[in-house]
Amino acid sequence: MTEQEVQFGTNGQLYGTLSYPRTSPIALPAILIIAGSGPLDRDGNGKKKGQTLHLYNQLADFFTEHGFVSFRYDKRGTGKSAGHFLETGYWDLVEDAKAALTSLKKQACVDPSKVFILGHSEGCMIAPELAKTDEVAGLLLVAGAAQTLAEAQEFQRSQITQSLEKTKGVKGKLVRLLNIKGKVNKQGQKFDQKMRASNKDVIRYQGIRINAKWFKEHYEHDLYSSLAEVQCPILAVTGSKDVQATPDNVFQVKNYVKAEVEPHIITGMNHMLRDQPEDATIMQIKKVYKNIGEKPLSSSFLDVLQNWLNRHV
Image (cartoon, rainbow, N blue to C red):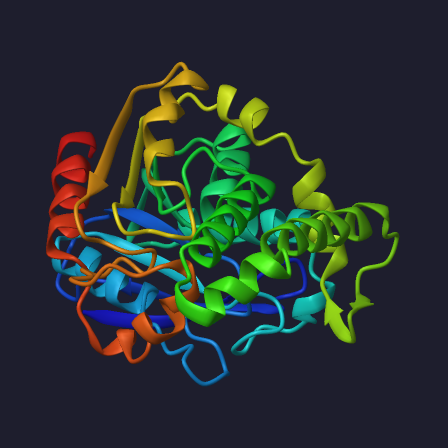
């Protein structure tokens, strides 16, 4: 495998890694990897403790081993890319993803007629915007298909309240006595209202700086109208133990698009695309994700990717 750093964007302010088989004499099919939410770099890692996930570099290795070129990049304000992460909105991310796609298609090792886009988590909300206006061979929507940010938040909040309701003993009695479930729901609604009403890129909420522009643009974006304009084949995959995106939504994608859709739920896989033997609630994921970057990606998930790509190249 050969890896090459690529500088791109309107002012050359973004950086990514192009990975490709070292010995190929011909232009190859390629995959653009669009990251999930949060200040993640091109490898899917953050700066804080517990954010070493090694998601996208492992995917790149897998694709290269199977004869594909891949391109992954640092989001604004992460890794080597310029900008400020908290000031970056949804449409800024779309603009950067389009620039990455344009750059990828121009690479000498890439067949521009065989470029796929893999979106992970939030990347599933960005990828359809590219497919609407750019010719792509297919979309791979992973751990977030057919779900808006607001719907994902509602799913996560419902799991939090369900987990609290099941609390036993004295702690459980206090949870019910203090109506913690009602307070969680009320705080969630208050947060959403604050983000929707904001006219600033960044605001403080309960003392914490929040990327309000990003939330507001997500809330206002009609994901399903964008999906309706997608013409290329779609692979929609999630894991049965994903507690951050609704697993069953992969089967809803076909309701919004006219294109071919192949949905899969990988038994035992979590949001970080790893096999998870234990059951865990959303309130326990910090423990589950500890050192997860040292684990390989789910082999069942990778098999699904390989089989689908082989049929569509």
